[in-house]
Length: 178
Image 1 (cartoon, rainbow, N blue to C red):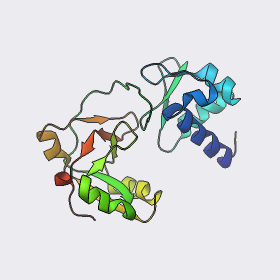
Image 2: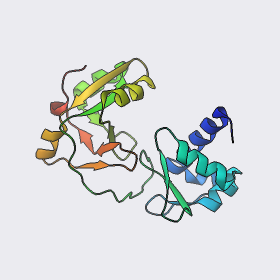
Image 3: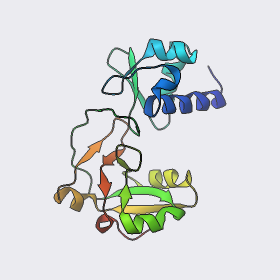
Image 4: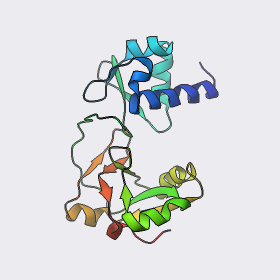
């Protein structure tokens, strides 16, 4: 249908537009982050079939359609204000966070912060966290005591694509590096 390179280029554009700057192409998102498929396709000069292919085949399931396929949104990772309407969930006992080695001093001092996003992103397995960390430099995987955090009143959400989200992870819940 489209080349791997074109798929990657369009996926990155979708991430930018749906997570950070819909105004870049004149797209309006509703309060839950949904944007019109018709408008998005017109503005990006995509066919609905190409958009569907990209949403359906994205390895990280970063995007999803609403029930009737007329709207699309990013699953998580927004820097703009949206209410994804996720409900609090009980996390597994342990979650993982992939980062770059260069970030460790700041994490040891302040814990994991959401920075310019809505939440800190956590993975249910080491392999996913390692892949995330690799994107940012020499990877390090941190172990998060999610069970204790939850027992202490920290709230967790599970995104549509399986990423665990929380407001922050204080240093006390981060186990030694692995």
